[in-house]
Image (cartoon, rainbow, N blue to C red):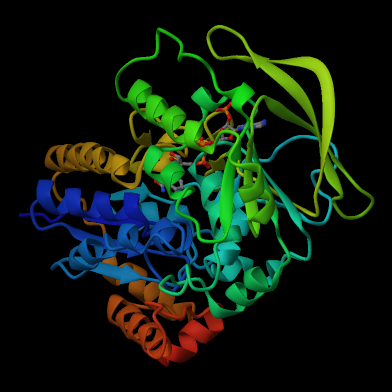
Length: 446
Ligand code: NAP
């Protein structure tokens, strides 16, 4: 029997679902998971909000997958730097790009590059302790923040900014980040959507969390709430939006005294499209144009403009995948150009890299099943290919003195993070730099 050799680039949800699908659909596959950071789990570790620990429990299943026979983990290996994609394609029967969508879709408006304006990928990366963003060090010395976008990421950002220390005690918000957020004088967070409440992409569980906050009240303007949803909206979409509108009814025009007395407020502002970031070097406000939504859901400006003064802006308008040399990118969806998961030849893609940044974590499962099926089929047709796989990669990394990390190393690092948080309610205290991580493992020499 010839065992198929597969490299999976990326250890987030889509990578792990691809691995488990390969284990189910191929006979004794040999799978190497290659991850740029020493730490696995991608979005689960650095994207899912620190106070959503239940969502993070899915890593138990991923860890089980990583410990299956035939599966190896190469952390701290950067494809494009330590090893090229072309080399991996030569070494393995198949290569799967499961790199997610780690970069911000940029809001193309004047002033977007001013200090104090952050994309959600970097801002969320910062509060989740992603080593790429520790140095972001945002200045939160402001009373008002504007969050642009009406998806779950916008809600995450608003919630994390207004929750107090005791509400975050059982989260894995890194200590230095908690210090910055909890010392900040933020009083008002304005979450701005270019369309209406019925068009918002929040899921209802996330929206409902906004009524459970200890220090903040959520506010929606009554005049923005529609009488009814468009008739052509059906199924799950309709149910979610109906529930969202019910929740927003609860936020509509709350008692004035309560709003006045509240320590913090989250304002949901709808029908406002960002035109320009105002300020000298640093953001001082955002100019918006009032919009109306035409039939079919498209947005048009009314010509009326207004300014929301603020000292910090986070744009949460979607993500895009990363690029690889020689691989085409689809700018519209923010994904790698592919046909049903096939990029070309022995190169495949899954998850957000394949589809763009949408859906919930489990949505990537079917991509894994699909691509694993295609790889199993291609291997059955080709028979033994003589590809070197795992040993070839190991040799190459050793020759290049790359300090790669295996899954046992990660488990050591994981235990060290848990240990660091022992005296608190937090599940872990993350290491914030690759150097610290490697030191905690007592790494192989680089
Ligand atoms: P998203 O759900 O696609 O939301 C993006 C938002 O940005 C939309 O409201 C969109 O408005 C707005 N937008 C796009 N371009 C804009 C522009 N030029 N000006 C103003 N607004 C603009 O994306 P996301 O919030 O980044 O989330 C990504 C995925 O992760 C989603 O599937 C989300 O559900 C998921 N996620 C889930 C959770 C959770 O389950 N707890 C947490 C975080 C993320 P339009 O609708 O008008 O285009």
